[in-house]
Amino acid sequence: MSETAPVVAVQTHGLTRYYGSLAALSGLDLTVHKGDLFGFIGSNGAGKTTTLRILATFLAPSAGSATILGHDVVKDADAVRRIIGYMPDFFGVYKDMEVTEYLDFFAACYRIPSAQRERTVNDVLELVGLSEKRGVLIGALSRGMQQRLGLARVLIHDPQVLLLDEPASGLDPRARIEVMEILRELRRLGKTIIISSHILSELETICNRVAIIEKGKLIYTGPVQGVRDQMAPGRVVWVRVGSDQQQAAALLKAHPEVAEVAVLDHQLKVTLVNHEVDHSIVAEVLVRGGAKLLEMREDELGLEEVFLRVTKGETQ
Ligand SMILES: Nc1ncnc2c1ncn2[C@@H]1O[C@H](COP(=O)(O)OP(=O)(O)O)[C@@H](O)[C@H]1O
Ligand SMILES: [Mg+2]
Image (cartoon, helix red, strand yellow):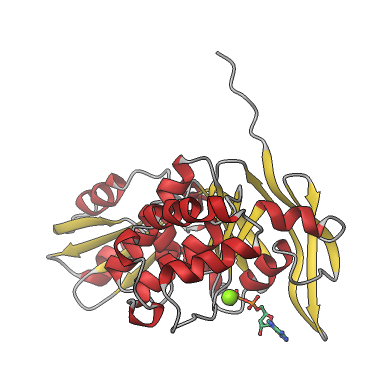
């Protein structure tokens, strides 16, 4: 059985944006495939909103280009707008409107015929789990529900590509999980989704691919699983010895596969040169050198820690 080649949904080439002399985005090359749930990650000010606004045709790039399903976001902006659903980081809520009124209004903006509108509104409400709230004033909805209503709004014209700017930010854990569940469902329905966040761990369980940007530049793009391998330094092993700590540290430091040993209060933090080194060498070295090994545990470097290190420029 031959695998079908992935279809490119979103592509940017050398995408660049200046605000005055500030390069908010510098030469960004991104490829998102059809059907991807793509995590776009970077700390505050990294350039996520700038990128998404350009893709959504609301902001012109200073240089470079971007296409969505083959349509250029500058030259072919109208076509792009028809196939995308863009949820900005902040969007006004019409507190005094009822849920269905609000969605009906946007359905009309997209020129969905009135005979079809009720059905469309019902469908998107069901998708985001707000069917019970149709007659409720928006101002009376919880923050999480308002965010889901925002999602319903961008789904009104059944767009193929969704651009969601930090849709889960500021939500409590439960509301966040609800949003993520909706995104999973949308992916099952065949949508291509780009979702931004400043928290890598928020996206690692739902996204199949990610891009990490920092100061307007791409640091990593690829599968989520690759982040740690590509960017983390060697694996870390924590050790407690019942003999002299300095002596144990010296034994370990002498080993070529040990990169670093830090002597802390009651334990040693041993960093091995890379992830391939078997951590049992630590025990071997200590026992052979006559140290008394009390405890040893491996530190699985959390993805979030990797991300924080990378975005603080602690790795190359
Ligand atoms: N309208 C603007 N005028 C000037 N600078 C801006 C403007 N919008 C964003 N910036 C700057 O561009 C950089 C990227 O911002 P942004 O794209 O909002 O990042 P993110 O969404 O990742 O937090 C930041 O340094 C920000 O201060
Ligand atoms: Mg932003």
